[in-house]
Image (cartoon, rainbow, N blue to C red):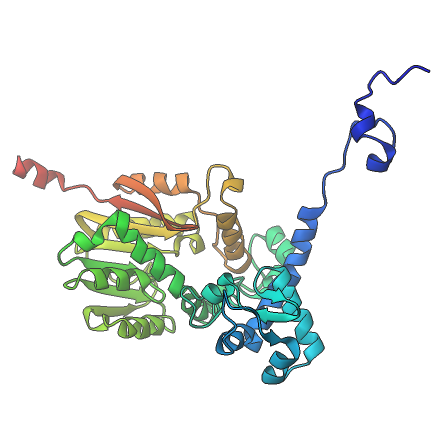
Length: 372
């Protein structure tokens, strides 16, 4: 009996593998779809754990990374005053997600949980997790937002209530990015820079620069209700006496022309739309002295969006909750900076997924001629 003319198909394309003989097709895995479906539940597992105090309690019990797990679900449930079987299901879910260690029914923090999910972690995101997605109801109506071109319940109607917890939650990460940026930006080499921080939130950029430059001063701007966060954080870091706080809309507040050495637009542009972003860049250019520098930080999208998934999803978060929120492409921003008159553009990544454009205002042409 003659063999098949294509014997190699028998090895990988048999009925047991694809359901029919010699079909030159293998279905793709459904794992990406299930990952998205389970993402909703995974997020709420983490939020519930933070709300219950799971990570901080494990830390207080000495269940630290590198130490054999000693805490059981019933022991932890008694301390947290919750149902032991339900807590065990939550703890097992956290272990599956890579956010806890589990060995023989006992639990401990892993390195990720200790660093990011305890209140006093080195880079704590504990206060960020609940607020990072924005109002959860807006996600349920995302299709309606895309149909209408605006969210049904935009945070623009009451921005301070949204941005205040958000800037508090992001402060630690942004301060780390601003501090690490000095390795490449070298603002610490400046003697006494005058800083303009527009939409400062908790003022991480102003704080980083003021701490690196003991003679620096800063104008710190944000909305009423949000700027109080900056007042508190600058005081906590010992630089408040070198700050002047200027509440109000950064599109309309008074800004002195050619008075600043550094202007900061830190994670505000993706909420403003293209027109709003161009206006902010123009205001920064006008405010800077010749040879002054603009620091524009945001989640920039790469030429191929799949190269920057974090930035793409952060842009979608803004679009789901704000009237003007939009994806902000790196190439797009470079064009706007050049159109506004900036030169010497650099794009750096101080820490993972945190991007920063630096751009310089040219020397005044008249000054250049006089110098010659």
